[in-house]
Each structure stands twice: as structure tokens, then as C-alpha cells.
Image (cartoon, rainbow over all chains, first blue to last red; front, side, top):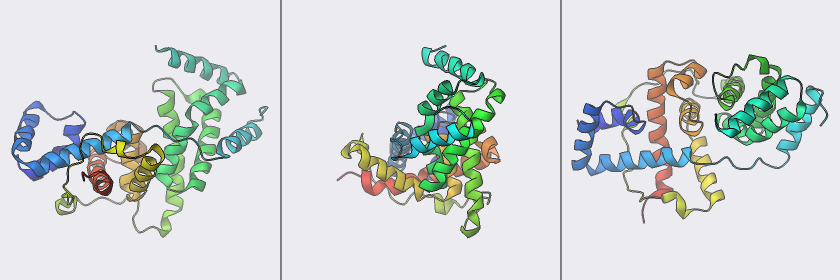
Length: 78
Length: 196
């Protein structure tokens, strides 16, 4: 596998959906290509960072307005 | 079934029976996540708030159609994404790129340019709010057709098939956009996370 091949299979590899034979080929390429190894590592970290991020608290007032709207439209006590 | 999901089933049943308090509990459990989905897709706080309200109103009025085949959260995300996409489509007349536009698979454009190592936990160099601002900024800078796919797959953890169905795209189209989106994000984060 060459650099272009690694790029084509990158998502499938990082998502764990690549066939074992292709994983083997890809890893063999990474052993001798520093650029591809860095791209694979940093893309994996990009995904991990977004996956692991907890949502921030809602900006001020949004929850109150949401509850008011729901209470009004659904005719429930607020 | 884990206790929190068992509790959720009870809350959904109570909300269906007209118990407003049960529905409010469900809303409070997920409103931050749904707002994040909405903000990530629309890119505007005002639109995200509209989407948040519409999504929960629709969820309440359609609770009977929730069959329990998927997680309640996934069901909510679907509603929110549809609302957010409607907003995005309404506003896209002014945009240069359409959400439905096919993506040319130009290899040259996908080839990474910034190739620098990040170390093990580059995100730990930043305080929580600072990191959040960096991540939001990088996500917002993606074109909508990449951003939407990356948000659903990598932030909300939907499957490729679910993402394809929700966006009305083929599975290969989702995969292409996901790869391009991930590479673009990686490149945008590089200046913050590279070593040294």
C-alpha cells in the first residue's frame, strides 16, 4: 500500500472496519512512512477529542425560554 | 437494561400519559446535547435555539411514534437534525455551497498538507473553555456538507448508515464526506496541537 492508499482507507481503518489483510498492508506502510503515521495518529486524536467532549452548559436563558415555550405550547404548568 | 435507561423508559411512558414533569426531566437530560447538535449544524446561536425548541415540541407531540427500537437520544437527534437541516436549507440561498452538492473526489485536495506530530494528549494543554472554543471554531470553519456528516458520526456517534439515511445521502457519499471532513478538521487543529 502507498500513501494514497492509506489515505483512502484511513476512515475505515480508524473506525475499525477495515479487513485484516488491508490492516496488515496499511500497518506495514506506516512502519516505514513517518508522514502517514503522523496523519493517522493526528486524525485518530482529532476524532477522539471530539468524541470525548461533553456538551458545554447552555448559554444563559436558553433553558428557561425552552421550558416557557414548552409549557405554553403544550399547555402544561411551568 | 441499565438503570438509567430503565428510568428513561418509565419517564417516556409517563410523558406519553401526559405527565409534563416527566417530559421536562427528559428535556433537561438532553437539552445540552440537542443544542450542541443544532449549533454545530446551523452555526448560529439564534437558529440553534429555534431548533432546540422545535425539536422538543415535535418530540412531545410525536412521542407515540417512538417505538423504542433505537435509543431515545438517537430518536431526538434525528428530529433535531431534520429541523437544523431545514434551517440550513432555508438560509443556503446565500451560501456558495449546497448541502446536497456532490463532492468531487479530487485526491489532490484531500492530501494532508500539515504533517506535524501532536504528542499523546495535546488537548490537555488547554483549559476546558479554551479547548471548547478551539473545537467549535474548527468545526464551524468546515463547509456545511462536511460539518453535518462529521457532527453526526464523530460527535453524536451515529452509524454511517443512520447518517446516510438522515441526510438523504448514499453510504459512499457519507464516507467520502467523513474522510474529507476529518482531514480538514485535523488540519485546522494542527496549529493548536502540534508539538513545540
